[in-house]
Amino acid sequence: RTFGFEESTSDSVNVLDDPEVGAVVIATRHESHSRLAVEALQRGKHVFVEKPLALDLESLGALESAAHEAAARGVHLMAGFNRRFAPATEALRDLLAGIAEPKTFVATMNAGELPREHWTRDIEVGGGRILGEACHFIDLLRFLAGSPIVGVDARGMRGETPRTSPEDSACILLSFEDGSIGTVVYTAAGAKSYPKERIECFAGGKVALIDNFKSLRLFGFGKLRLPALGKQDKGQKTLAAAFVNLVAHGGENPMALDEMFDAGKATVEAALRIRRQFDAEV
Image (cartoon, rainbow, N blue to C red):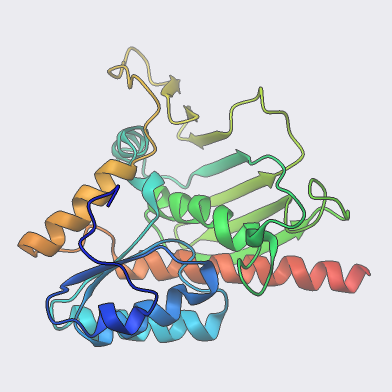
């Protein structure tokens, strides 16, 4: 009642089998995302699924197949990768379009510490923080690079606390087909007084810096000035509006499936590399 919902149910089948339902939003705990998304797409429902897309490559592959089959029927999948829809991201993407040479990206997430018992840290249910949150920045760098990911490496911090465990503090290195490279620094070991999210891009003798999605600073761009961005905007409203517009009016999916699943595969691979590295060290 508080949010104006007409009905509620604890059985997803009641929603997926309802002929009056044309689109679904999947915002459940992470382990059920891929399964529910596949079931919805197969029933002809448009799907907005929160990240992560899946917790393993097998589930991700099943969702990718279902998404392409559904798209051929005009049924669409979008994911909760909202950072690519932020005004700062869109402005930076436009600037980078004029730089032909490869780029170097550094995305830093000062994520903060979570309680040891937090469900997202449960590998079976939440998949861990790399899959659950660092995926945002793998997708963001894929979007900014505008080029497929061709290589993934990752290393986690060797520790046992919620600040220093490999699932809470890690570095991920991405290589792109066009020669660009990107590093995602995801850490729970920082201070709350430091900005939570920063994205740096070095290319063509120029530097651009997105600071917490509140500002976009330029270095080496001459007298070029951008309009002030105002308050922080991580793109959530723009992403939601894009999904509603796609469902209501059709047209081209603003979130290309190839990009979405490229980032999804790289995220799973990064998480697997961190776990294998830690297991080997132990």
